[in-house]
Length: 460
Ligand code: NAD
Ligand code: UDX
Image (cartoon, rainbow, N blue to C red; front, side, top):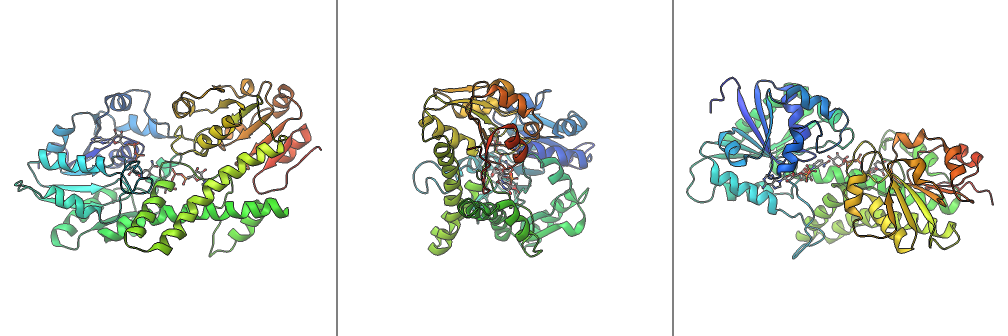
């Protein structure tokens, strides 16, 4: 299909945390392609077209401004854009199913299926359809059945191209990826479609970093990557419990273990557990897949990664309760950080949700502060009594008995903790759920300090 001054027209369905940033980077790097991101949500698209982007991601605004209106567009005209596209990325949400068979484990594929049906309905020319969403293995088969059903003579070639970016570092992850993975069918048309996608990434990604596999390996590799990363976090968190029992120091253990080049240093930070929209969802999806194939021992193995994560959250709450004389009734707790990690406003599956709910069950009074996640936090805790949202950490700590540090924002490391200590009830406690604060300094000021997986520093 001719696209005027552009070589090809790309459309991405789904303008979320993945669709928006990935397409922005493609538009930046490929001025010869027209890139349009479409979504059914008018407010989301309006925000992408404004100065107030719908997601906070360092470097994103600058990248959007570079291409928006030139070769990058955001629109709700889903049908028109599908019709005109040569290449369609599907980047809709695939949350964990909350109902019926597979509830709590399987991926809810209703949005993907609706998208596939829309593409089939609207298309009048051949198209490459790319799975950007994280999907269960063999989803491409389902997509193909839907797209090629009925009388439509249009040819669709399906590729898998999972996204590996992490929030907060998304722009760098996409501009300098460890690898790009493309799964395709081993047929002449499948390989030709694959080469079209390789051509896009060749604008900025070195050839040796573009990996090509069959469709099922690509789909599975995405689930396995997330499972391996989350497994490392649960491994070190399980050891943090052993450290607390034995007075070993989990950071020293992680450092020593990580120095073995076969193990490596990354993703060994103990804390209150992993959050975010991907890890739990994708592991549970893997578990469901294993159960489907009656690989029950394999399913049990991966289930433990999630079990340890839940255990770590509960352990953190119990430690607060026990240390503060077994009652939190009426005590003010300043919660430092609600986002699931720093440099994002995203709170999906953040450990802070469960921790705050548990503290409220103990009848504590919460004052939550976060540089970018308070709007989402308000929605996550809507309707719960005993909680306030305070942008200023110095106000959040006024009269507080303890601080629960849940997100490793740099801003929190730079605060004046003497001033904070002076404003708090005594004895003042700090529970550093991310081990990112200066514990000795806090202790010297007068705090009773409880890190994760390290001996507490106590004045009594
Ligand atoms: P998201 O919820 O932020 O965005 C999805 C968007 O799709 C929403 O704006 C929604 O309105 C839109 N949508 C749903 N159905 C639609 C339809 N029929 N037509 C048009 N738009 C529709 O989700 P996300 O975080 O961007 O994740 C998208 C996919 O990418 C998921 O499969 C996720 O697992 C995967 N992924 C996410 C990340 C991450 O860091 N968030 C990283 C890698 C992969
Ligand atoms: C993850 C994957 O890293 C990314 O490749 C994939 O595309 C999407 O899922 P994301 O969830 O955005 O990315 O962030 P990530 O940096 O992986 O952190 C996930 C959670 O693990 C956060 O809550 C973080 O605080 C926690 N974490 C991470 C730890 O507790 N310890 C660590 O050592 C690393």
